[in-house]
Amino acid sequence: MTKIEEQDGRKVLLTDTIQSEIGTTSQSQLQLSLNIIKSSRKFIILMTTISTLLAILIALYSTPIYRSEVLLAPTNSKNSNKFGLFASQLSGISSLAGLNLSGGNNKTTEAIAVLKSRGFTSEFIGDLNLLPILFSKKWDYRNKKWLDNIEIPTLWDAYRLFNKKVRKIKRDTKTGFIILAIEWKDPKLAAEWVMRLVNRINKKLAQEAIDKADKTIKYLESELDKTSIIEVKTAIFKLIEVQTKNKMLANTQKEYVFHVLDPAVIPEDRIKPKRILIVMVGFFLGLSLSVFFIFLRRSLQY
Figure (cartoon, one colour):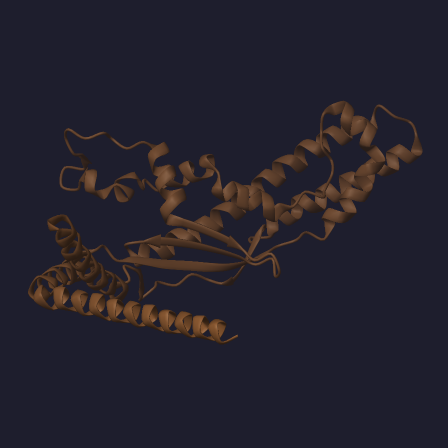
């Protein structure tokens, strides 16, 4: 028993000694690191200052970007469900003509898809002649032409830029509201473009609804002459009535797809660049890189 206690005592003593040595080594390493940093403090201060100054220049001279947005609510037609109910009575007839008489299509989903589409965006850019504005660095404003020795941007280039960096669309799944935003360096243009997009999509889908209603009514009227069944005639008359109401709604309702809850205004505050963040990143980047370089150089020397 005594021997075991002595061994345990020696083990405890040995463990304490090792921990003491480890603690002493850690303190010495920490002191050595601090001495290295202290001896190179001029270099660290210089590099951190240069990095911070560069960050300040970037923050000050970066092109400011402004965001103008409009809050939209879907405009749902009360006739859509009624039309879908009546359309089921003529599913056989409509399939023969290749027409889809169902009124259950989600106009909001369609409108958002059209807003994001290449065709709609390209038409918007082309009609407003936005190519020189989107690619202003390549445009000679004095001579009203593209600069020499450059690749002239196309509508496809403009669509990719507009879709990726300029136009933003966000839909709230809980409320159904949509936020349509434009981010651009000119705040007035940002507000103008976003409202033009809303007006354009409402007019476009309203005209499409009118054209579709005219086509459907024409088809249904032709079917009246082909049948003598009273039930079918009654169903066709109901469908014609609903299509006529849909056409009238598209003609009279200015906000056919989207109702503006909060219109766009000219923004006063920029969203980019975030200058304080850029300066902080520049400071910590310069500090960390300079310290890293000091220890890397010392490890290569020894």
